Image 1 (cartoon, rainbow, N blue to C red):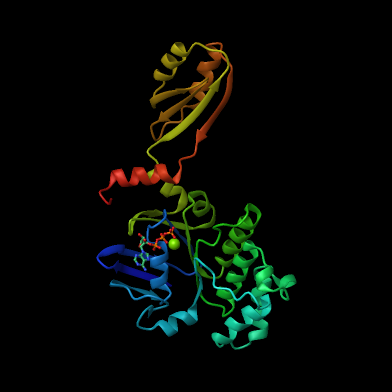
Image 2 (cartoon, rainbow, N blue to C red):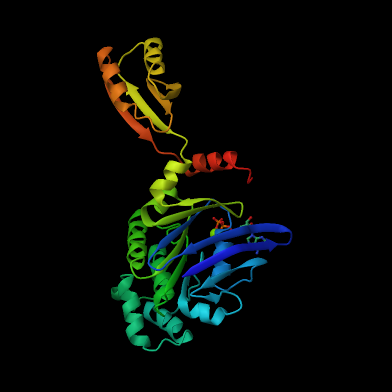
Length: 307
Ligand SMILES: Nc1ncnc2c1ncn2[C@@H]1O[C@H](COP(=O)(O)OP(=O)(O)OP(=O)(O)O)[C@@H](O)[C@H]1O
Ligand SMILES: [Mg+2]
């Protein structure tokens, strides 16, 4: 449904998007995960026909996003980073405005369906200016959906909204993924993992890793970190004990706790629990530390010479 090949965007002589290639199939939610300035928005703007590529191409349903942008816009719903809103319109009028602009065949029906889908039906007569940020974001989603596009492109739809709204927007995106191709950008790893069928990690304009969430984590995580908190104990003895366990690479003491770096493929938890208890200490806590996006980027970037 989406085909991107060697897509490149230069601003002056700066390559914001550099030789990016990927596909997104029907009924798939693909996440574009990357830090600020990675090139997410630039990629999306080329995909939606708003900006010509400097090199390569992107196609939606077989149509070139720049050369055949009318065909593409008909098939794509786009929620930009900053949703343009008209404060003096009602919610319903705003979505109707977009429906008419896009020459939707049965505008009334489609507007109602879009409002229903993003749960704004009971706010249809509210003025846009009186919507909370989260509700404005949902209004943006309704705008992106009203012409019933096959492809939906959402640029960081959960940024700046409260946790409850974040959950609702994520759920709506997942639902949309059942009958649309969705390209979704975020800088939050956990969000990409939760929402997407496949993740593309983008950094400095390059796709630096991609895959299904679980596989990707395996691929990029150099091992696991465990946090262990003990009751009263003798640090020297405990360090000895950890060192002797196969798979433990590195030990760092943090107060009464320890952070262990464990090699991939080793599950040392049972061993640690047994040995701590046998040594007569209380094991108060043992949990894996989630890797942050930053850790993952640092890993990827140090692995490959993309920086
Ligand atoms: N119109 C422009 N002119 C010049 N440089 C630009 C322009 N738009 C973006 N850039 C630069 O291109 C790079 C990629 O920007 P882009 O907005 O695509 O990144 P992003 O991944 O969406 O970032 P963010 O998470 O901050 O939204 C950045 O370094 C940005 O400063
Ligand atoms: Mg952006």
